[in-house]
Structures are given as structure tokens and as C-alpha cells.
Length: 312
Image (cartoon, rainbow, N blue to C red; front, side, top):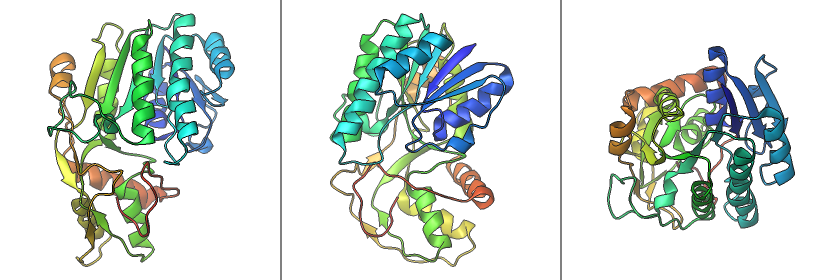
């Protein structure tokens, strides 16, 4: 199968490349390397990499016309600067429009869109069902939600995944790499008084395998464990993994641009695809930390406004 992956040098995209190439698929990656790393996509048979931004319509059109993907995985997103509304809109909104229209023009048969759980804003229920009203209030959430809506407005069948916090190789956002990097360096940390839903990469890959099937249902689905775990729990697991003595850590209220508790209800995904998260929370975190032991942590990004110190 011919599969195009936007943002294919990022954490989710690059893991999909590594997952699918051995199966004999031909893969096109589009990435501007703003957050993704060029070195994670070495020259490999069956893999084509094009550098550029999906905000450039001509770039997207030419890449799709030359490759003619049957399946499009839309993982590209701008999020590294919460104050750069223009970049978020250019990539997350206009870029999504360009991808949707290019997919239609070349006869692609399915788009799998990756959406942030922040599309739900401050939810009225937890765990959050997939039919919960959207209410994003950050630049990243607003722009990603608009992009999702435009994709669903197009003529190519779309399945849009509202995704929990995925742990796995090359994770560079959130509390796990932040705590690991700072504690290894002997630096101070603090925890926000928040809780999140975590999903192991193995479970994530199984979900995408299920939803990319050409005869699978379309629509909006949560991909998640359905359970929230606190940032303090993450901190304690990292401390224990590093062999450090248990310690107190300041716990601060959720920031104005944050959500106290995010847990997504995967019931509809389980019903429609027979998919369920299998890896328990503590095991998923342990697997992530073992990967950092081997490969280290480089950059750490956040969709939140910068603060002093480090939180997850």
C-alpha cells in the first residue's frame, strides 16, 4: 500500500514509518523538521522523504501528485510556540486544507487525522466521550480543531483520532521527558496539579492499524486508556526509576491555559474496531524511561506557555 505521512519525522509519524516499512508498504514522508528530527528517517528502501511545510500548497500538491498515496496519515502539527497563532493557523488549519484537497485530487481512499484531546477544552464529563462538544481555548487546540473540521468537510473518507498522551520512542513533550532530563541533571522540578491519560506506543500502533483499513468506519474516535494519572505519579515513577530517594516536590495549580483532568472514553473505538489498550500505565512509563536510558532526551517541547522551573 502507498501511504503518505505528514509530520513523519515526529514521534508518532516516525514510529509508524518503522512499523510499516518492514511490512512492504511504500511510504512518503512530508516534514519541515521544525520539531521532528531528520536523522530518524535514514535512507531506506520504500521510503521517500520530502522536506517542506504543509502550509505550502504547491509543495503538498506536487508531492501527492508524484506519489499518489492510497492512505494519508495526517500527523503534522505546529505547537512549539503557543503565542505564534499565525504559524498554528498556517500549519494546522491551512495545511490540513491543503492535505485534504491534495488527497482528493490524486484519488486517495482514506485520511487518518491525528487530533489533540485539547479539542474538548474544559470537559463537562470525565472520561470524555467522543461525542462531547468541542471547546478548545488555546491556539493549538483551536487551530487543530478547525483543521479537523475542514478535513471532515472534504470528500475523502476521514477517521479522526482524538489521542491520549502516547509514550514511546522519541517522545519529546510532556512530564516524562521533562522530569527525566531535569532529575538526571540534578535540577529542581515541580508538578502541576493535573492528570492525563497515557497510552503505550504499541497500543497506539495497533489502533492506527485498525482504523486505516479501507472498509473500517469513519468519524471521530478517542484512542486512549480511559484512565487519568496525575503528574505527581509520573514524577514518583521517574524518581524510582533513576534510583533516587523519594522526595517532596511542589504541586502547583493548573495553569490558565491548561486543563486539570483529561481522560478520554474509548468505548466507541472499542465497539467499532475491537481495539483496546493493553499495556498498563506503570509498564508504559517504565518502557519509556528505559528508552531514555538507552537513547537520552534532547529537546523537550510544550504546547503550554513557558513557566519557570519544570512541570509536566
